[in-house]
Length: 427
Image (tube, rainbow, N blue to C red; front, side, top):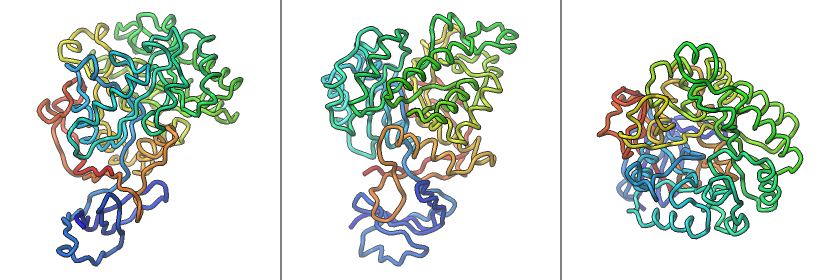
């Protein structure tokens, strides 16, 4: 039986709260054994031995939502480059938003995306979990055939989401009513474009000082409050995307205390940066929703640790050099992140002692899987292997040649980060 033995690896399992150093034997698509000193004839079992002192074995990471360039914008990203980026960053499951061209709004377009992924060479690959569009063309006007889309195999679909704000409350209510019996997660982004206007930074003294048009907090909290009232009335489980303000966290905490069936996520960039950083006018810090003010950033960090905000999403958004190399206000919002987020977040929060490894893993692995209604990966004997080997001591430079993505739109380009994924298993 071919396989791998990791000697003296530190393995983390958030489900059982296990944090131990042991030998781990991986073969035939699952974890065969875990023991303090594994007695195994490596020649007889045909296994590779990795001396993994100081390295971490942990469950595969789960990204709730990201953007694929293919089909429609292959110059930004292909499925092959996206999947390679995900594996390089430790992600074994990746949600794909439906804003491709054509949009993922019919069973045919969803199957086509999955067929394209199946045609790629088999290596370790992430499992793609496309979000089916709530509205035709993901443009917020006319409802898709939700029941037909929901009939796809359960593990082939993340749920329903446009990835864009829905402005018609009547349509939103009907979507919640029709979606409730289908047993699929509905993900919604609370954002009122009429309030946002031309804002590119969170409204406040910092944006004013930097001459950046401001987007008020109410552009997020007003539609969020309306959404929460609809959830309370209809009862459909909802995932709230792209939480970016302290007031939104307060509303979500209150809604959870009332027992509303909601989960929530923020993006990794909103944890790492604030409006103060946007004053560098780096177009790679132009995001939507915009970066929060420092109190928003701190509240989001606290909310992730406390579980009020359940998960960290990557929201990987590739753009070409020409698209992104413009003025801050003119730049399309978004950055790449699948192969960078875990290492950067580990360096910022775990290595500096602000978070425990479990707190980061819950937000990037266990909780995202649960938000999708899927079983989380586990590091335990006889479990299917969906795991990442990570070395927190390896420094590497984030250069264009080091990235697997076709796009380079990241504020971390040419910087050095300490911590790298060594290997990924995904049975």
